[in-house]
Image 1: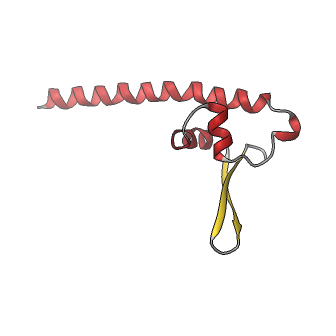
Image 2: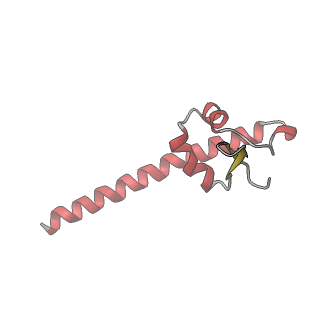
Length: 92
C-alpha cells in the first residue's frame, strides 16, 4: 500500500511541475503582449474578453496568471445591481 501511495505522490508532483512549466509561457506571452501595446493604452482597465483574445486562453485559466503577474481585479458598480469587472496592469 505504501508503494502505491508513493507512486501517486510522484505522479502528483510530476503533474504539478508540468502545470507550472505550462504557466510560464502564458506569463511570458501576457507580458510580451502588454509591452507591445502603445504607451497610451498600456495603463488602462482591461476587460477579461480583451485579455482572452490577446492570449488565446480562457479567462478561468488566465486569472491565476494575471494575479501572479501583479495585475489587480476590480469592479465598477453602476447603480445598485450591475457591475463591470476589469483588470488593471501592475503599476496602474
